[in-house]
Length: 165
Image (cartoon, rainbow, N blue to C red):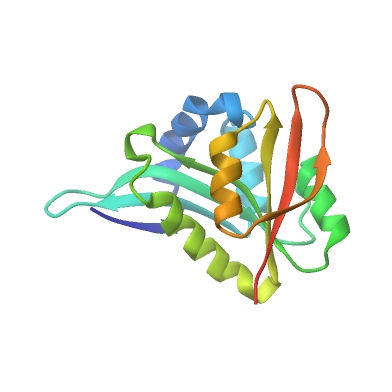
């Protein structure tokens, strides 16, 4: 199995919306209008594609990354934008459940972190109430550290940063 990231194409929009809806319990809702806004605010909006021999590529995920100074209206993003002059903010990464535990998250993070090196840090948030233990462990293993918490009971998140050389 070979996987790579490529920029979102108009033909991918329905699949991205479906993937977001499958994971909406841990994401912000996304409709066509909001996707168009997010696409405009993002520094990169990529899909994750699988390439199998003798088969068409298959979209199995997506990732949205926002840079500093964007008009993005997320309170979490705004916190990072006020705290840092240079950063990339990983807004969301979604992978089809059928491809979990196959190393695709590592492929995405390796590429996004590589892109973030010139900005000095990659920022994101992880749910703490309700807790997302798997995500907290994954991000800790990649060198992310908590810098703040936002929200309250039932909506609290850990704001995390990975410093990059």
